[in-house]
Image (cartoon, rainbow, N blue to C red; front, top):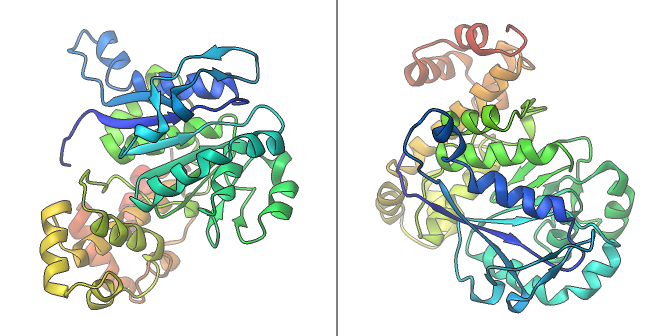
Amino acid sequence: MIEQHPFKVIVLGFDGVLGSALTGALDLFSFTGVSWQRFLGQAVTPKFNVQIASLGGADIRCSNRLIMQAHCAIETVSDCDLLLIPTIGDSIDKVLQQNQNLIPHLQRLAAAQTDIASNCSGAFLLAEAGLLDGKIATTHWGYANKFKADYPLVELQDNQFVTQSGNIFCAAGGSAFYELALLLIERYCGREISTQVAKTQIIDSKRGNQNSYTNVTLHKPHSDTLIKQVQSYIESHFREAIQVNELAAMVNITPRTLNRRFQSCVAMRPIKYIQAVRIEQAKRLLESGEVSIKSLADQVGYSDLSSFTRLFKRATELTPKEYQAKFSRRAV
């Protein structure tokens, strides 16, 4: 994986935010690459540069009456790798009404293909910005009926711990935030670092219902928004038949140009990226123990099991059955 650290993380602060969600996100990402290294006497290498941003850089009045000082103004954030939307702690309608000026900035960063992740009722801010229309999402079960009534264009899956639609992630709240945080840390830093964080923070990762999101360790940090758009499309549509010429037409460039730019940004061509995303999703399904070998190929976009098995073994040096026996949580 291409190393480019620290990654830039912005935690959105606003009046009425749940204080523990705001500071918890700040702590968890700030100590990635720090706590484990301290315990083992290794050199500290922070993986994320984390800042809290608010409108105008103003102080943030949390729902528990704690006053938090922002590091910067959201207006000055022109780019970041990850934008986190914490839980709304006060009345949701009140917070949405008072923070309408945040909406253009969420839309602006989403248009730049920034990864955006909400926790619990923070999904209401994403929905208010129209970023979840036609996409799957989740939120706390206690807010599910209100969410469905207010945002009927969103495919709410309130039984899910974590959802992913392209570059938009949602967590259901509570311990689900840790599931989401570990997933995002894995996206940027790899599974080993994510496991280190889980161990140092004593997080029991369940990774429930793997169908709701793909393995995202293939993420390569780069600034080409066009290629990010193509990546997001592949990660959301990997179960479908995807042709490189169709991807190129989608972003109005030639297949040759797409191949060249994709290779430069992601260190592989689009066809290889499609295969890699499918293989990684298959690995997650096998690890969960919730899939049969017979149906596996179809679930990740292949009609022929034998061809898929050959690709899987080439990538992992194990057949799907061998991989499941070795890594399935149910087997353990």
